[in-house]
Amino acid sequence: MKKSKAYTLEAPDGGWGILVCIGMALPFTSALAALPSFGLVFGDFLKSIGAETSAMAIITSAFFSSMSFAGLFSGSLFQRFGMRQVGVTGGILYFVGTGLQLFATSTFHLLIAFSLVQGFAFGLMVPTCYTTFNHYFVKNRVLWMSFAQTLIGLGAMLYPIVMQKLMHWYGFRGCLLILTGLNAHAILGMLVMHPVEWHMRRVPIEEEEQELKELRDQHQPVKPTVVVRVQPETPLKAPKEEPNFHAGDPASRRLSHAEEHMLRVHCSRASSITSLGNWSGPVVVSDASPQMMHSLQASRRQSMVVGGAVGGAAGGSVTQDDAPKKGWVRTIVDFLDLTLLKKPIYVNIVLGITFALYSDITFFTMQPVYLFELGYSRPDTATIIAIGAAADLSSRIFLAITAVCIQVPSRYIYLAGAVLTVFARFVFNGITEFTGMAYITAVIGFLRTWLHVPLPLVFADYLSKERFATGYGLFMFTQGNAMFLIGPIVGIIRDKTKDYILVFHILNGFMILCAVPWVIEVLIVKFRRRNKIERNNVDHEEVENQGRSAMVH
Image (cartoon, rainbow, N blue to C red; front, side):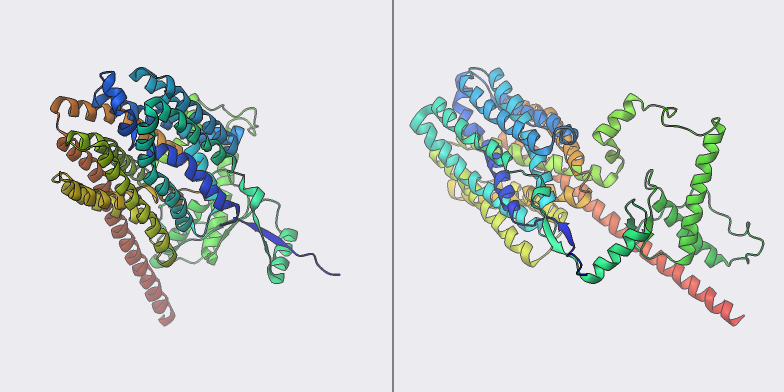
């Protein structure tokens, strides 16, 4: 009897995912390109109502604060309403926020329309785009993220030139009316964020694999199997109570010191594996030795005995109704996945990117106003901004091509961008003439890509697919509120001192706060990993020596 062909489902890594990249580019171009051109569009309006630089800083900082609150709850909203529905809602709100700016007559109106409504809408769209992207692309994420970011860079390059022309032809209100129609495309971008289940690739399974799968299905329980691969570099946690290998079975021989040490290591690995939450399904350890399998089983039996003892002490078995209810603090911790804050590496990633993004966005937001102070005309200012955006675009193409040939960790790319940006900014502070300003803006724009393209991939590489939405939302919350707290302070410093160079030095200091802790972390992790490898080698040598001496005796 001919067997039916079996298939396995895999992520598309292309196909509809290309439309996902294009859909992601639509709202990102509208939002990210609008911030550097904010002074270009709203500068004259803010001057006409008597607002200063601090007002611009407050408006842009409040935008990120509103975005952060939306991002914080995005993971929970995805579970309740669905990712695509949340994204479409964000697209509609973003369109409405732009329309409300048409009727703005004060700073408060801009705070409501631009900061509150558009910021909240963008906060819903960002995790929708990045989470959908991570579902569609697994093998070539850097390549396709560079493709999407190239589209965003192309839009960012054209944006200031188009805004300058629209302001010249139609004035402030006419420009905003056309911008409202352009931002309506964010809704279209969210509509193409289909669930990945609609476009999964069917990959045929070989006959041998199919037979093995059928055998596993016949002999294994219904619960899925967790496959754990224990690496030599895996950090080992010593158990709180070390097992006594001398007691127990009277027939067991006395173990040597080296064998006892190795068994403790195996047991500590097993205890860490079996503490995967309330997991009751089968566990397969890929490099399990007989001793490790024995300690794994003993560890599971011990956990069952402890559970039974606790239940007996309580007066019988604990049912679901008798289980204590979660406190409100624990409910919030689980709802927002705040346990991520216990991970030092995650906290370092969040704080570093938060400082770097604040420095980058504030720098490019203030640059047009600084150029006006230097006496640049509006067309010259728009040209400088467009040159920076063109360099940004070329850098995105460069990253896309490089990703095909060289695989570099996303975090190393981000770190290199932060370090090189610090040096480029110091050069920027000493330049005032047009040609030099164009060149240094191009350099900073080229490096800016290294801070934006790898950003979501840094989190995707560190977090699991299930925790990405909540982990990225927690970052958005931290980043947005940090910008809301720091932004007005920097704006006030500028208004009091009337010194843009001082402000640019402060922003460079925030970029350093990203680079230095990351370098320290890389050095510490490499040092610890080398020490662990050396300790493992010493342990193996001790075991081999003990084995040889036992054979001699």
